[in-house]
Length: 227
Image 1: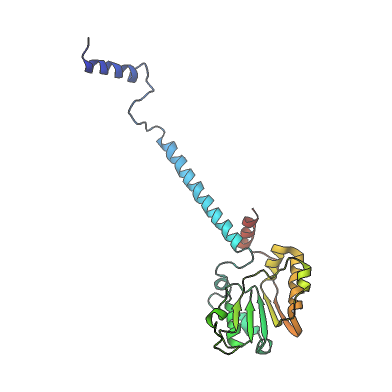
Image 2: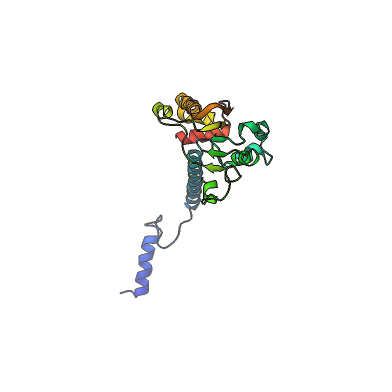
C-alpha cells in the first residue's frame, strides 16, 4: 500500500495529466480575461449612457413648458434684459398687472421695481410672505409683486368664459411657442381668449411672439419628453 502522499500525487496526476488536459483544479485561467474586461467596460459604458439619457429625459419633462434651467443667463448673457427698454411707464404705473409665463421671474421683478405697478402677479410667493402684516404701503417694491405656480391654460372654454376683469395690463413674453407645443391650436386660442377676458376696458395686452422654429437642443428635449 502506497504512502498517503504518493496516493495524493497519483490522484492529482490522473486529473491534471493527459486524461483531462483541459481541466484545471485550483488554478486561475487567464485566457478569458480580455473578453471579460471588454464586456465589463461595455456594460459600464451602456449604464452611463442610460443614466445620461434618463437624466435628459427627466430634465425635458421638467422644462417642457420652456422654463428651462438658466433661461435668463442664456437669453441675456449677463446683460440687462433689452425688453425692459421697450416698456412704457403708462402701461404699469399704479396698474394691476399679470405676467403670464414668467420663468424665474427676473423680468417681472424688474418691472415691479422700475415701473411701480400697484400689483403685478406672475404665473413661488415672495411679496406676501415678506409682509404678512401689511406694514408697507401698496405699490411699493418688493411688496407689489407675487408669484403663483399654476397652469394659465384652462381645461375648457366654459372656465375661460367665467373669467372676471381683474387686470389693466397682461404680459405674454416668449410663451406662445410652448403653449402651442403642449396644447396645440386650442391652447393658443384659450390663452388669448382668457387674457382678453381678464383685461379691464381699455387695458393693454403686451405680446412677445415667437416663431415656431425650435433649436436642436430644444427639439432633442421635446423628443425625449415624448419617448
